[in-house]
Image (cartoon, rainbow, N blue to C red; front, side, top):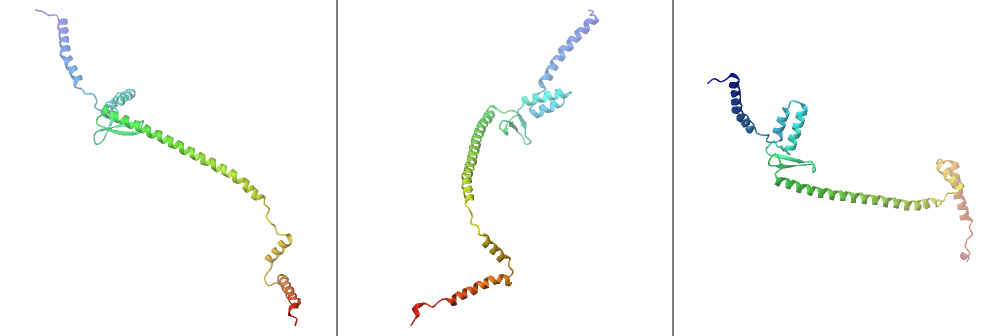
Length: 201
């Protein structure tokens, strides 16, 4: 039986396709997907263009919430609470997610209490300032009244005598004479006083 050359090529091509198709399908089947974010990011780094790399990293980020820990296991960062949680795998399990959500509820309660406490403290501080201002305004009229009370002032003659006494040099005749004349006047009064009538015999 004679087979033409084109027909033989056609049959060979079909045979090759049938043989290679299962092998290619088998190769895709055993090629495993990345196990976690780090493996996914390593594969994304091999992209040819910057745009492909950025898009692949975004896919890795969306696919894996956890990050590998150096000692084993994974951590999950919850930006709403600004804290991390230890998780067993590259993504939180439903039970782990439930605990994270419970912690977030507690976090919101704490934040609400802190906000209320801060508002109360601010209000108390404001009230104290108002009380201090009102106290000052009450004290100012009393100070003004006290300032109006006249202070006794020495007469010009006495003031001049005090100034002269303060500026007078010690043991000078001009300074000592007034005091000496006062002492003499006191002695004169003492000797010139009349004896009392009750001593007459």
